[in-house]
Length: 373
Image (cartoon, rainbow, N blue to C red; front, side, top):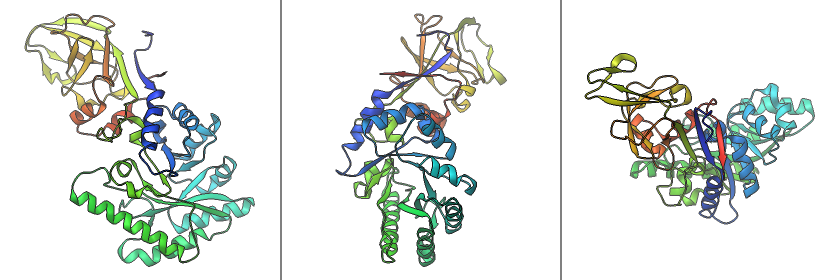
C-alpha cells in the first residue's frame, strides 16, 4: 500500500470480466451484450472497464452523454457506443465522426438530427426510445397515445440520413419484488412488443430490439430479445446471489490519527455524538467530499483487520471518526475497509436509506482508482 494515498478504491477488472461471463452465460445464445458504462462505469472507471469488456467480447457499450462517449473514443475504444441521453443538434457532426449511436426520444429531435445529417451529407445511426411506463424519456405510446406514438416513430425512422438500427425501452420495476411490480413489468414488455409489431406493419424493422436491464436479465429472461443492457450486474450487485457475481470495488482508507477522549465529550460538528466512556478515537481521511455519504453519520461501522469499528459523530468533508476502544490492535496506518470484500456496499446503502448505485457513483474523482488483477 502507498500511504501517500489517503483513501483509494481498488477495482478488480478480473471481477468485471467474471461478472460479464456469468451474465453472458445466463442469457440466450446469440443475444448481444451491451455493457452500461455511464457515470464513469458506476464509479469504477469507464475507460478501464470498457477496455476489459471489449477484450472479453462485449458487443456494445452505453453512456449517458456525448462527453462520456468522447472519452472512450479518445482512449481507443472501438466498440459501438449508444448515447442514452440527449445530444444537441450542433454536435451531430461529432456523433457521426466518432461513429456513435444516438438515442432519439421524439419526432422533433429526429427531424433536427436529420436536418444536420443531410447538411453534412452523412448518415447518423440512431436507436428509438419508447416510453412504456418509466415516464421519463421516449415516444409516448401508452393508452390513448398509441396511434400517435406509432405515427411519430414511423416519421422519425423515415427521416433522411438517419439509420434506425435499434429500438428500446426501459423497465421501471423489473428489479422490484411482488405481483404489482411483475404485472407492471409484463405490461411494459407487452406494450413494447406491440409497438414493434405495429411499426413493422409500416415496413420498418430494427436490427436490435432491447429492453432487458439488470433486473430483467435476472427476473424476466423472455425480455432479452436481441440485446441485453446490464448495468449494476456488471459491478457485482442485483442478482440476489443467483448468478454468482462478485463486487468489483473495494473502498479503502487507513487510520491517520488516534486520540483518547474523556467520557461526556461531544464529537464532530454539532456535538450530535457524546462519548459515554473514555474512548480511543481514530480519525480516518475520508469524508463526504470523497463520496462517503453524510447520511451515514452514526449509522454504520467500517471494517478493520480486527473487526468492525463504529463510526462516531457527523461525517466531515475530508475525514470522519471511528471508535477503536474495543480494537486495541488497530493502530496508526491500520487499513480500514469502507465497503468491499468484508462489508457490502449494499449494507452501507441500507444504513443510509439509499441504493448501492448511489454509493458506487458517489466515490469522487479525487479518490484514486487502483486497478488490481
